Image (cartoon, one colour):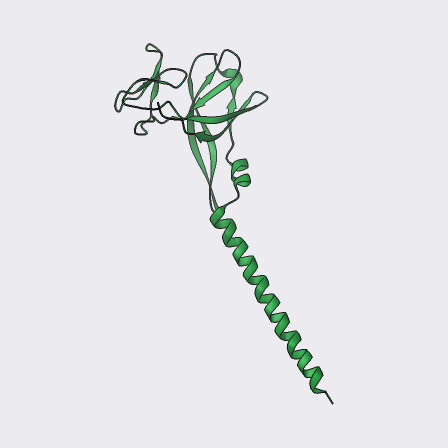
Length: 165
């Protein structure tokens, strides 16, 4: 015969077990929702670097537009996209990479060797080789990619917005 104290202990054990399992499920769901909403900057920082190619083919002081593949992570979906940058091999061996969009309204600009300037065909903005505005209506310099070198390979990171004039 089962005593009433054994019956109560079994009931308490089931209640405690169910409460603990419910708390565990709620904690996992809250952690997942927090990671989704707040993201993990370290992971996105690692994934945002793209191999843009070999810089040994570049000529010093001559801007060249390059295209490269980049991964764009949107929550759980990763997309492979083609992107471009204007890259300059500086005389000291360092590399500068500009976003291909004008800082005025986001039009694609091009390099005019005769004018020795990046020129935007939309509204006439012009930028020197250092990315500074030499003719408006753009008010701020060209945005730059974060750059790192691994041997002869150029890696481009997130675009760093330039500050105003």
